[in-house]
Image (tube, rainbow, N blue to C red; front, side, top):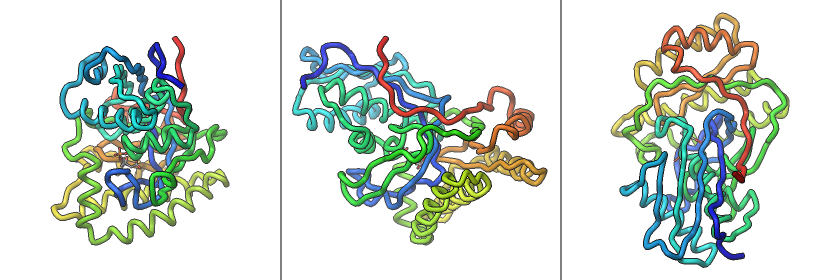
Length: 329
Ligand code: PMV
């Protein structure tokens, strides 16, 4: 197939990892140290349109209406090189991305961003990839993007090379009443990228080996909890897993953390809600923001308590979301 003569537009949603990826075995191919498992969310997503065009002398990338020139542009161009290699073309591309996620604040905009880009760029280059191959391609941009090709509960099989490291669906249509309350505590970009953070954890945390062992066990437990619709086990293990990931950072040399004072305050509030009988559990990615897993009957109590502490605008309610879609205007 040939590159398309009009832009291809794709939409992908963010996902929140319940069993986290935190460390690579291969930095260039982004092969992780452990398999991970996530829930794709309906509220936060990225729309990306791509067209490869003969007349362009360089990739032209706009992000939320702004032309990118710096590191952001290089990262996307490197990713487009992977697509060009796959398709056997050399044309540059115009890329137009609109992000409906607070960027780089630990709400995993790179997951939706590279999943949408993988979809739009591959199709615009004339490729017709399977979901698995799309997930392998998305992985080359950002590990967490591997899982955003799929809706609902999805996993990333760590594998050992480019072929064997891919995403797959666990339960694409979630037919139970899971909700995720997101608390945005800081919208500014993080100081330590996930790439730097995980590199430091792998290289210097004395607990890294224990992390890989427990995360591997957590994967099986959470997967079974999803099959059993056992929310308490799913929530409990997800929260433990998140705390252990962050313990790697605190135990790195030099020590660092993505938490701020509000993060600790929010964790305390969730523990108080649990003590008061509301089954709710928190998870945190590479940023200060908190995501609270709960079931529908607990949403009002969780939202009310978090809004009282952090303001109405800081609290958003999300539900399981869909996988990659192509948009025809
Ligand atoms: O894929 P990256 O580079 O955005 O790293 C994601 C790391 C975490 O969000 C913290 C965990 C995960 O599995 O998504």
